[in-house]
Amino acid sequence: MAETGLVWGLHSVQALLARPGSVVELWTDSARHDQRLAALQRELTTAGIAWQEVGRRELDRLASGENHQGVVARVELRPAGSERDLEQLLVDLTLPPFLLVLDGVTDPHNLGACLRSADAAGVQAVIAPRDRACGLTAVARKVASGAAESVPFIQVTNLARTLRFLKENGVWVVGTAGEGEQSLYDTQLTGPLALVLGAEGSGLRRLTREVCDLLVRIPMAGSVSSLNVSVAAGVVLFEALRQRGGAG
Image 1: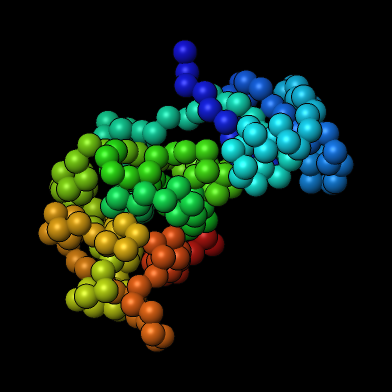
Image 2: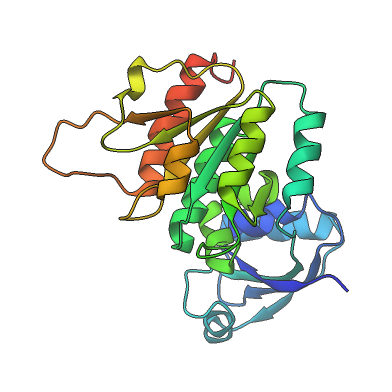
């Protein structure tokens, strides 16, 4: 039987409609009657998905106090992919690989924000280690606003080994670090590419740094020494997207 979990938020639940049969149960706020929730309810009706109206207190309980926007669903969770899924993804790609690698990001809010930026930038997969890193929690899915359903999330046993595998398959592995050899904006980010960002505070681990083909820095004009990992991900991903010709 597939693993189930709770997902909340209008965008997150709406994204699940692309996977027919994934919604097991759904609850909406009985006191909320605005256009956004009504639009979602129309989509649910069209998709043949029933829902139950409950009080806000019950939704708060289901969502563990997080901002649920009046909707919570129990769903069959899309599992994280594995090394084998990554290998197949590379085989199936018709465009040069464009991947985001997160080295030990532990905050689900940051993971969700990174997934959302990855989706917007056209990234084909987000890769992270299984250990000492955040997985696809309900909070991460909510912050991702549907991107957890649209962008493959792959968890690997040994990140350094996976990066070496990517390099062996012609992917250029570029890490970000404050002491990077060159500026992000002086770096060519076209062609097969994996952008690697480190954990909150500690940055890239030593083995990860050693495997990277190049370390780049994000130029900063202010007094702070580093950016939040999700902000840094947005910066590097959209610079790469610009160089790669954007979304057309």
